[in-house]
Image (cartoon, rainbow, N blue to C red):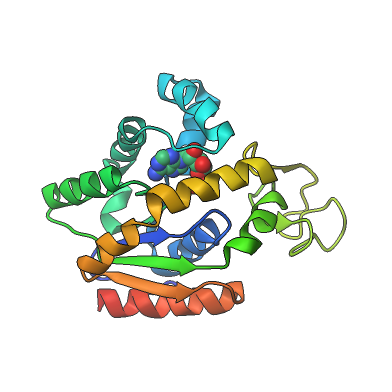
Length: 226
Ligand code: AMP
């Protein structure tokens, strides 16, 4: 299904590590033709490419801390400047600080835009460490799995593409996940109040099935863009 969004939507996905932001963003991308902008992916790309930004970000990311607003805003601005973003975007993992939220509001205002909707994925903290620590993806197609919640049908073979190589993010271990959760509560959770004040906040119970949460998010985006 590819529902057409008529006005370019700027959708923010807020939620702690493990809440399902990436999974849901990819599903919304397919369904609404929006472009997923994950600052985590952009930063991992910079780390892999060995750029100065990547070199500065690497140790912070490995420790589960937050990369400086300056670096994050630079990689985000560069990606936002690409023409495909005109169709509308889903911001996955951005903003994460009050400074980033304020910079985003300015950046969008310059484009004659504003945040359409900020979806807060509400989950139980207690489950998040286990969710993050068990994740892995197919190295070929990127399909996501989990050691206990979503195993491959045949051990060592991707259900989606038959690939046999898998990878785990360096920061998806219990210790780093705890640091990331702490950073979320200290720096990012307060943004929920910012978006509530702007009248665009949509809290969603994100402890259910992936399909059920995707349906709830779809309804919100349909409503926000109609
Ligand atoms: P994610 O893929 O969203 O889980 O992000 C992985 C890591 O990248 C985070 O733990 C941070 O170290 C860094 N990161 C991603 N997005 C941001 C952001 N908006 N601000 C600061 N650091 C970020």
